[in-house]
Structure formats: C-alpha cells, structure tokens
Length: 261
Image (tube, rainbow, N blue to C red; front, side, top):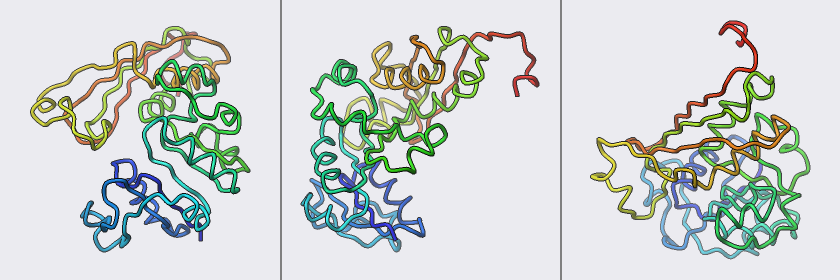
C-alpha cells in the first residue's frame, strides 16, 4: 500500500483529492493537514465523506508527516509549496504539487505572472509537468517532483494537443475560449463568487492577464516545437464545477472532418 498524505486538505482541491485517494485500492490515506480545522473530523467539514473517511485534521508537523508517508500531495496556494517540496525530496519522498510553484520551467516567467519570488529555482529542472496523456512515462519513473497542471491548462492542452502534434493547425492562430464553474475560485469568501453575483450571469475575467496563460503556452509550444502566443480568455459561469474549453486554430491543410479524425 502507498501511504499518501495531503498538505492543505480542507480546500476544494484537497477534499476532491481525498475522495479520489480514498477510493483507490492501493492507497492508504495518511495525514490530512489544515490551518483552520485542526482536531476536527474531515467528514464533519465535508459530510459527503461520511462513512468513507474517518480522519482528524492535524497541524503541519512536516517531519512527522514525511516519515510516515511514501508520497505527499501539496494543495496550498502558490508561493507556499516550495518549503514542503524541498524538505520532502531531501528525505527521498515523492511530491505531487497541486499548486503553481513547479509548473513553469523558467523561474523568471513564474515571478512575472505570479508576482512572488520563486523559492527554489534550482529544483525546477527536476520537476515534471504532471499531464499523463503527454508525460506518462516520465511521471511513472524516478521523478521526485510532479507539478499537477492547472485547471484551464489541462482542458486547453488536451483539446489542442492532437492537432498541434500532427501539425494540422497554425499555432499562431490559436484562440482558447474557456468557461469554468465557481468552485475553481476556491473556498475563501469573495464578492465575485457570491451566488447573487454569479447566478444567471456569465462574465470574462483575467482578459489577457490570466496566470494560466504562460502554462498553456509552455506546453503547446513544446508540442509545436516553436515559440508563439495564444489568445486565451476565461469566463465564469453559474455552475459549481467543471470546465468547458473550445479551442480554435486555422487549418494548415485542406482536410475534411473525416480526414482529420
């Protein structure tokens, strides 16, 4: 059995991870850490886990957690994963970071878009982008740091990867129209995610400035083998969860729909 602990277990990302791991036949849940709910039952915070997960949330005693775990998932906001990752790999543990700290290969790009100093740029070459449809063999190898992709990048990259890999579309023509549910904003209180602000509405946000843009460009550029920019616009829609991406690109060849398929 693989013993897996979660740092930051009580956010929406953390609880979804708990749900998935609790159903895995070869995984045993280890520590679940939280700043706000120390000592409370995770199923008391998320009743959907009643009868399936009986564990208390605990403080982040990193040394103790790492000693008792084979792999650690980090579900913290950007800028907070680096200390955990550094300590984990120094102890020979595998880390899967669900935040943004290890997704971008260049520290200066991360610092430009996230407006924080990267705490361990020397570790970026050791991280693998955790999209199994593209990097499955490397993820399952001896890599110590797996950078879990962002939500919009996952949908956008998977939508466009086949066409780019087969050179069917012009990379410079790519337009990404993305729509996300409200849970993508996280569990914290925010005026823009209140029911009365979101219901019966749809709005673009982060136009030409969303932090997932360089992540999308990084991976699509790798597939295309050259540098280019994409036009990416996310929208908030009145649903709890889910993402819909429609990707557009000008065809390089005159092909029918059947020929493309």
